[in-house]
Image 1 (cartoon, helix red, strand yellow):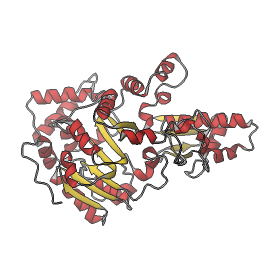
Image 2 (cartoon, rainbow, N blue to C red; image 1 turned 90 degrees about the horizontal axis):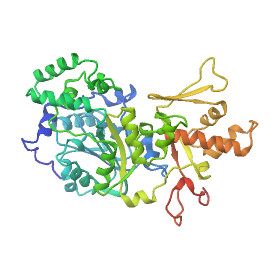
Image 3 (tube, rainbow, N blue to C red; image 1 turned 90 degrees about the vertical axis):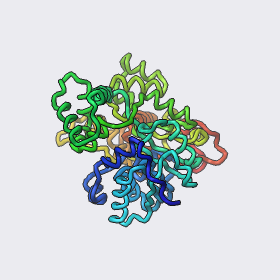
Image 4 (cartoon, rainbow, N blue to C red; image 1 turned 120 degrees about the vertical axis):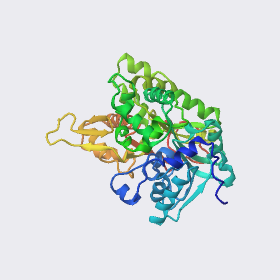
Length: 435
């Protein structure tokens, strides 16, 4: 299939990304990764989030829908045994993607100039669809989501990122001000925005966004200023609107990419009336409440799939004994700290992003067994010398791994479901034969 015709000249989004390629182009992706560059929805690092019952997540057909400048090259490098197709409406973005593909010899990366809404013209389907920061720039996000849905294989998974409405409230106040001033997207307009940001009073709600992780550093780039404050078309979503968008367009919500974003235990720890009331809510309502209280989500990253796949996909749970057969893998960015003079009661601390968990000595022994190969039952062998009853050891493991699951600090692989096993919450069923 040849490249699509150039986007129409009145396409405000296409014009913007032709003039202001975004994100800032990475010159050498291999060096960038070695230096700590990473993308969300990294399949090798986060495979159990997408397919808990798959040990092998290679040999995939992957679509990066709205690839920007760098994302597709990162995906192709991280998934060398898979085939990656990248589409975008910006020739400038695709030109840099092609540069990275040639520089790094990415034979598994194919690049196409194509509107996301026309993805059916590819006459292909995919195991994994990745589209971040794209749907919220479309005139009809639902139409774009349905287009992606129709090229997703029956057991495929789609990862999406949409702007979050809560933390971006101040951004939209400034967008309105700049619109009233008649600002466009010239270099002079960018300087006017920078001047406005420099004189914002401390009480302005935009500071919550500007002080968020990575926001200030990212806005050093002029293209980021344009993308954030001078964009021709964008919208933001509350958690409830995320669920509505997914369900109204024939898909099922598979889960947040990082459970820490809306973890009740992380945001409202303890058993006080507040946390108890939030825990009594459903998933949708919990996310809405935490979003409003924590005021921390500038974007929402989540995964969806076809409803039929959702019904049979494993669900991680800790009520029964099946969790003993899970294989835990610590989140790849989780840091384990053992102080030189530790507290005997809590000698180890787990930390990721803004959240920390203090572990007892017995809990630390279990965490040390999480190598991505041992089951939780096998990890319990580390407590063999402890003066604890077997039931107490299992209860300790249940509490610990339920916490690590709730906060996203650990990912879990589950044994394959036998063919005659009925659908349901996998974590609350006894393991099948040979599990």
